[in-house]
Length: 272
Figure (cartoon, helix red, strand yellow):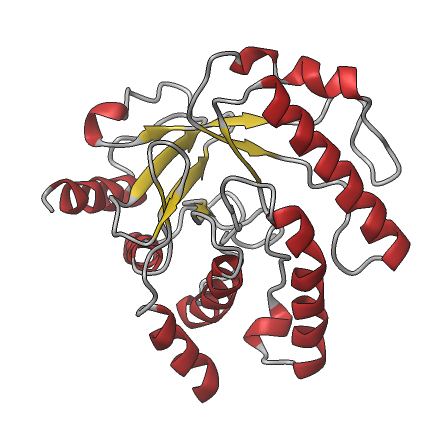
């Protein structure tokens, strides 16, 4: 684990790669962006606190499995609501595998994703598109356990996905929390953010203030406030922004610890 801790420290020294207003890439330090991807019922207007809107696009209806394909007209139909939009958009196409699948399946997935991205750019040329959780490839236990064989597989996957990464405007790794283990989260988050940097695009990490639903003991529970603030601060030094997502069919709680910490984090950004 000592090697992993050194990696985390080194990542904090990276110069931020940022997206200028015209979409060009700059190494100059830009404001750290906090995107509002929250879905809570009764959510107040968060723009006044400095949060930035973001839009998400899901696959067409009926496209939910690796074997499913979406035709061009279906994809264009999902993008109709974005006409004239000039902000960030995440494309949530998780069903087409790019990791731990056969080479043929991976190649097919990358081709499908590339076509979706091409249509998105043609349909809404003013928007900035990225794929949620596709670039870089995602892993947890291989990274946390420092498993050399699994890390090699993960790195090979990131090499393959580089062809697709050339064409996105932004990179959006998922850094959701699976366990109440800040040290383990640091290791996997640092590795994913380092991998995201290799594509030389703005990096906006997805964070969720709840534990992931795959943990049957913790799902539905909010992260402790100090753990959540740690994640925000961690990303602040290693990414260009975060997308705070979550709250589907849940009621907004203005006194939730995670939100109190988020407001403090936003205030610290606004005071710079």
